[in-house]
Image (cartoon, rainbow, N blue to C red; front, side, top):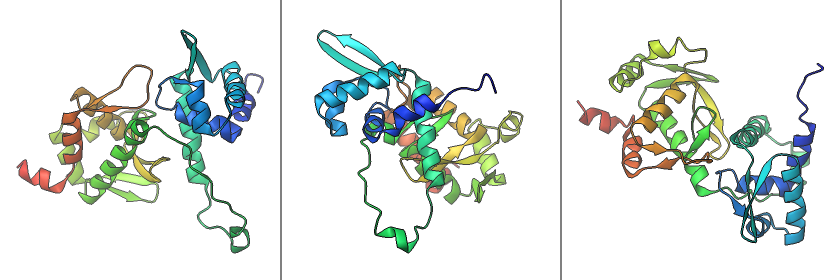
Length: 244
């Protein structure tokens, strides 16, 4: 265990609710001023600068000087992926039921501010996440292209045929060193989206088709006008019937 990575420093930095709120505000890859981050986190400018200084010194943020202004952004895409993984883990580990004796002591907390673009469509590891992805997952289920059994997802015969019509062949995906399909918890939607090799293949298809675009230094995906139409039609039963 001599070379085990030390995560305690990062965990300490993210444990503070105010610092985590500012990290959330930067999850889409944009750079924001200290004053804006202070407002989003409910901090005074001096307190925000102190927190931002710790996050920068810890390697989680990088600073960009633009004239007299200082802008902060995530130091690397891996930082955003790590924060999102923690959010997903929190969703999975949240108790489904709270004992009655504790319910009176639970105080509601305000959800951290997350950019709308990140909520809508974003990179989640190697596949699509966000509202767009969660809606697509539900359409795949409703259309009978996939079936879910607890934490297992299988592609049906109907789904395999429909996906093959669009250039995605399940037999080819099966040769990859990953599950073909699995439910991935979506921290912003509180419902799953599609992960696994099929999830990655769908994201690649959408991007190659010009339906989605990934700006530099961002994890938020841009949905084109054509993509807005085509992704919402994907796996819709009425759209499939019209195609034949």
